[in-house]
Image (tube, rainbow, N blue to C red; front, side, top):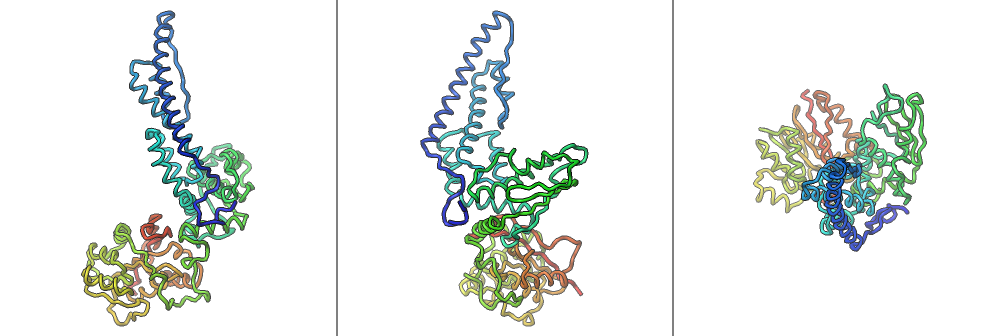
Length: 483
């Protein structure tokens, strides 16, 4: 079964519907189990009191461990007696924990969860909600209805954790080698010692994704390539471990180098990433540049004018990273004015706006009160007609590398020593076509390196989900050399 073969459905491999009748049966069983334990508690203490009178002996009863709830305290409460209400509360939480865990397994919910979602679910089992039909529906109903998007998000999150290049769909390179640093501690140990379960979960998520794409059952932890690595002796390192989908070289410093070896499955992953980030398969306009690979500007506007407006929260975040106080600011693609208004709120002395759409340009002037608004294609504006600006804030169109075009053109409007703050597609940092190389060359030659800090600042995943795209984004923050 190929997940990517039918991207329009909500199908996820390994998922079988758990019916409302089955959930109701689980909830009824939960209630019955609580009743049995409360009855056992009462009966136990009737009998132990009689036993104590007969021989003066005390009896302990371990109930088992292994779940989020503290079973040792529960055992203590069961044995010492005297507080039936407290025991009823404690056994209810313990059984609710087991019921939530059982339902998650029946739903194969882990196939929908990336590492973060798994951690959040495990944490919730420490103080679980009551296991009722309504709570089951609210907790898992949304997950089930949106299971494909959750699966796609899990794929995207897994690869974005491996390497910053993979935050962008087009940063994913078929056959690329990955390096996971510091996975194991090897000094002073006979076997590689896992430094963090987060690393194991990330590694096993990669493997799980490939199994699911092929429609195969996912092996347990002990059957994974990672578990095979952890069984090695430190004396055997460095060595190569061959897995089903990739080979891994393990080094004495605890690093892992991973090589993917199935080109067809990597192509499937590319398609899943494309569907998640852009709502379509590989080849969407967001992921391409001009066919002739020219660094020259695009001469036509972006599709739908690249209308993915910045949220007030993201605008405030990037302006906190930069500085526009007392500055003459240019906003070259002002749209609905969110960045321009944020610049004004952060103390800009004035804000000049360009906006290609007449209606939005009218609103910028009449509704939002910006005095200098140009209803004009910014890429056709001549820098020589304007006094250089102290600062530029912008969220240009992303598709076909237009964000690179807009940033390079805006740079000509910036005075020496001025600062540019641009929200861009995450691929702007690692794109290798001529359009992106031209931007990287500008940064290298004309930007002030400052204190060696990277000019690329990651924005939170889903920063533009409100606008209908999951594409990862970055803020490019540059200061122009003074001389």
